Amino acid sequence: MNSFELLHAHRMFAEFPSESLSALCTQIEERVFPTGTIISQEGSIDPFCYFIVTGRIRITKKLLNGSDGTIRFAMPGELLGLTSLFISNGRSASMIADTETSVLVIPHDLLKAFLKGEKGQTAEIVTGALFRELARRVRQKNARLAALPAKDVGKKVAVAVFDTKPYIEDVFLQFAPEQLSLSFLPFRLSRDTAQFAQGYSIAVVFVNDRIDAETAMILKENGVQLIALRCAGFNNVDLKACAELGITVTRVPAYSPHAVAEHSLALLMTLNRKIHKAYERVRNGDFRLDGLVGMDLFGKTVGVVGTGKIGECFVKIMQGLGCHVLAYDPYPNPALSLSPDVRYTSLEELFTISDVISLHAPLTRETHHLIDAKALALMKSGAILINTSRGALVDTQALIDALKEKRLAGAALDVYEEEEGVFFEDFSSDIITDDILSRLMTFSNVIVTGHQAFLTKEALSNIAQTTFTNILEFLQGKRSSELTNEVR
Ligand code: NAD
Image (cartoon, rainbow, N blue to C red):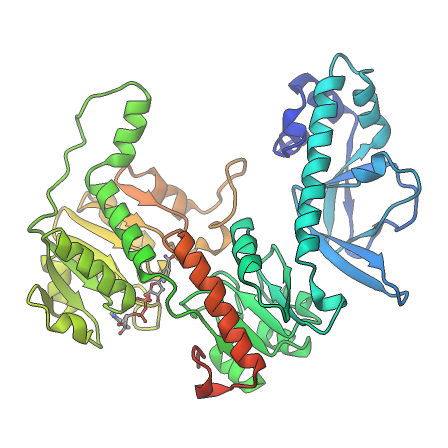
């Protein structure tokens, strides 16, 4: 991306007239700072704004005891140094390149010239954009202040919440117990970021945080005693390594099985009744029905793989639609075994007979690539595959081959085996380098959602509340079987 495209993606610069932004871009330079470079020193006069292109900048400030405290990490897409535009008594914090970091350097004088209107009749628009940006920052800071991480201010227990997003921050702040001090870290936990857990005794993590043995070791060295997963699946945690290191792991076993089961239904309905195509068509004023023929689900056979909490909800929804249900689970669900409309069977029979196959089993060694070329070959021509469980249950390349051979009516996936680098992030102005995912998304009979099946208000509230219950139990001294949701 060139500097115009990079800056235009920023909410403030997006408001600038295109000519002004182009003019600005001709006068700014890109610089690369090696790891550890002090880009700007607290107290110094540094007449530049910095727009981060790649890398990460550590923002530090002198603490009362004279040491430097890390306030936060600034990530690509952030604009730093805007408040110094109007304040001439030096920087309020230091900026240090935490990895090799590339930035666009924007002289304050240049921005001031736009504000004065020296660069054309842009003053009003640019001033508005700038003030809106500053107002947003003040509001954000106020919100953070209201939930000031007590890590530095009291005897609260410091909790690092990794890979956060605004909707997670909102709900976690809503339910946060008094005795916890939450810090929201917008990046994922991995062996590269684990050192940021320094000073936190609890790490709250999500599906794409990767806690392998090395990461667990770094967490341990930095004082982490509890990894509180804010999700049900725990395939991303090396439990053996955590146990050996004495790190407790908890999870949220169920936050709303209905949310995931209902999303599976939404995907099935969309794919079967071609709602995704109809939506686009009608918006373009095209009201033809060609190519929109679906099938009645009533009377069809639905194969459900994994009949735990989510699988059970999905079975009940399908029963409500008048479907016959075939189920596979090494541990059949007693509540369903008694139902006359549900028949447990072998995987082979389920694959062969079902019109719709929906996956609700966890990712384990046994379920990895459960849907492979062999399984796909067994499936009925015109079957629909739904996966809201974990991506690696499906061999994506084999699925693509089956779709190319037109052996399936379609697939709807909320999860993807290589989702880690892509899902939950915005690639709308970037290049997706994953050719398999890109190919998958070209099929008109494939729907991909970005791991959003859990995303309901109820589920988010339950996630936050159960995560806090798990943490409080741990802080009360409960261990192993005394903990309601320990994973071992
Ligand atoms: P659960 O533990 O209640 O049920 C899982 C069921 O799978 C159990 O009955 C278990 O016996 C069965 N199972 C285990 N191995 C199996 C195998 N080899 N073949 C078939 N079944 C097998 O879990 P749940 O709450 O129903 O969640 C199911 C999965 O859904 C989770 O593991 C997680 O990966 C996924 N999930 C996805 C989202 C999302 O947003 N997309 C959200 C929550 C959970």
